Image (cartoon, rainbow, N blue to C red; front, top):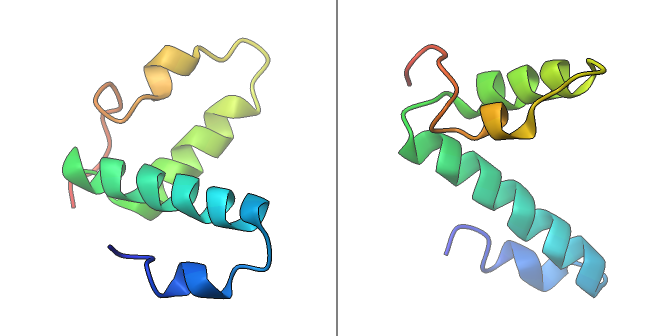
Length: 67
């Protein structure tokens, strides 16, 4: 529902899919009590390390400041 009207302005299908993924990540972080910007910054920082465990980046496993 969040992006319903915004998705009307996507120029192609891939842009709409990217928007949907980003909204999903943000809302899942919120649902798990995380601040979305902090969660995304944490994920990007961890993904830059060579031995990143993707399972540990799931929002229900991350321990950050609560929203």
